[in-house]
Amino acid sequence: MNDALLAAAKLLAAAGIDSARLDARLLFQNTLGDSAAFDAAIARRAGRESVAAITGHKEFWSMDFEVGPGVLIPRPDTETLIEQALVLYPDRNAPLRIADLGTGSGAILLAALTEFPNATGIGFESSPQAHGYAARNAARHVAGRADIRLADWDAATGPFDLVFSNPPYIPAAEIDALQPEVRNHEPHAALDGGADGLEAYRSLARLLPSILAPGGHALLEIGAGQAPAMELLFPGLELGRIAPDLAGIPRCIVLKARNSLGNQGAIR
Image 1: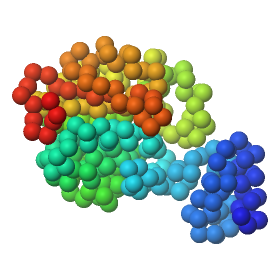
Image 2: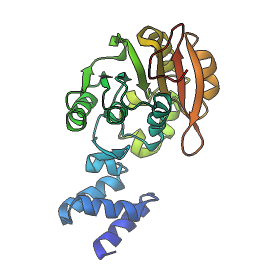
Image 3: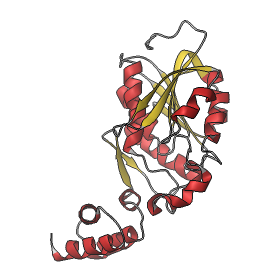
């Protein structure tokens, strides 16, 4: 590690960043060794902006996504939703109709569309900033197959075979205790789940039965400790399972529309 990298790593470590050496290397690579740009990036990281926010890029499902102010940074835990979709629909050629409610950067929807090349999708996003990121990411990765709409998810009408959502689920009182990278630099609207963290799920419980196709599935991300509450929140749908992420934390609830013959892609 050269002197500049070593000094940067020490500065980041002093700011309380555990991954100081790695982050310094990543920012050095991103700035192509330009000293002024590197110093500015290190200053931002020391101010507890995430590396993704500084570089404007984040990997999700081995894909590169543009991110930045006003959009939630995709997390590896969220890939659990894609994994579960692949279990539910083993036929990769299925012409699925997919929706992503609160699409953010578009990471979930676009990852799913790359796995199902005959599928089409609609992403609903109420934030103009986040919508811009999702639209650009869609044009880059799945041009012509994703309709990114500047709209609240209540505008969804369906029918959809597969619905994703990573809704806000942090209890409002716990947001101040989040890491500074999240608390100070990511949109609170994408984090704040109301007093008990379940407000968005109640909204989804009202919406999903009306937009899912017969036999269709909804895959929703949940927070740590929220699995027990899900048993009672979706009376209009069948709760199939709650899948864990790589750390073993229950992360994805699998819901299925009732009263139908089902559709061709689904496991019954």
